[in-house]
Length: 592
Image 1 (spheres, one colour):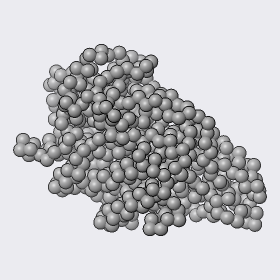
Image 2 (cartoon, helix red, strand yellow):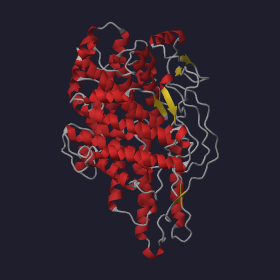
Image 3 (cartoon, helix red, strand yellow):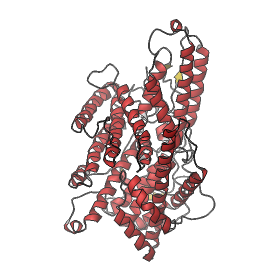
Image 4 (cartoon, one colour):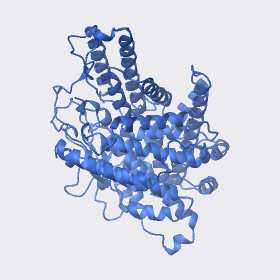
């Protein structure tokens, strides 16, 4: 998200100082958009090893209390059965999949406990204690083990099963919190293939055999729910949209049980989120022009408002009981405001019948702040990190823009921005340099420094010397930067890819812009592997799959190419959410 911030108000005092700050910030943010490698190799030559079962056993209870309620990949009983069967199994594919699951369960639990501790310490004193080097080293060792799984991720495709699907989805969660969004997209594309091969992607009502095993059916329901959530997150972050049909049927099946009814509510919101993404930010949508998109956005906003009106208690920001139910309601509210911000973004400021995007932004950041500072023994803070990684940070940017372009701003706005930036900074403490969380943290720091310097300057400037019109302090321009158009797309993800959001026009202004030269996306580097071996493993996929594995030029590894002729291509540009080609990059917004 390369924000282009400039000043050119000749009548202002200290104009040169502001111009220098804006130029420096612009250059720093543009550096965040530079191409990067997906992830660093684990170069010690070691292979993935599962953690000792005694450690896994110790982490089961905290995991299902702190992490699983928000992203229920397993049931507690089901995971214990996996532990028992792992010691007896002689199938190397199953053992490898379980090792991945066990490693990531421990890792996500350690991250949740660490964030809970950091949040408590930040509440206890204004100067929160720093990260524990022991805890951080432990977390990073499990992240390194997850990277070892990525070195041979294709082995999880050899024997498709529910277990291998859960292993891939757990890797997606790790990628969201610790690695790059391109890693998450690639691993998720493999997960879709596995789900398809075991018949889970096409969700249907329970048959008689499944009804006799309620627990197994519930576990499949929850895995399908997790796929739906992760699919939407991948769409926003990387520009890939995956075909996960029969979501409405999944919603109905989830609503029949009291234990999963809250998931059904979230699925209904996810369906609206998919409409916002497809109608406002896809290639087809951005080609319509700003007026048409604005009208569509108003319609999507009304749908979201109607959805919210039917759930007043679940979205009431004033009610926070500290219970699991209250935290789940706030999770839902954060998701709603994030989607509402994306629906409001293309709407012109003078349009009637739509809430101000500033109001939505403030509400969203207020909810993040409340959840971050809330006292809870369960430790729900990893869910916040996953939420931050699941949506473009439009609320933060819009409030930053307001603070920088207004003559007077409230201390509340300043506090909300500082709270969000500080929270993201903690989320980024263990993340890779190329991860979205780490780059978002740097972006937040740049904007906060700019705002702080501007506040100091405004406080020392005489009132009569200030500009008379709002917005004169900073004029944001979207000057095209010389470059080239998008590179040739090398598709991956099989026929699960439904649409691409690669676009050369902003959803706001509709003006075509050039993009920076970027290298093609690199797949996760994999060791040499026989094409015949992997291709034969794909024969177990149903007949609809017509993909093949092929090498891409001089890039390492193998990727899955879609088979159907004319299938839409995904956005293969690395760093999608931070690129000028992204429909969500900040320098593609008409701020004037």
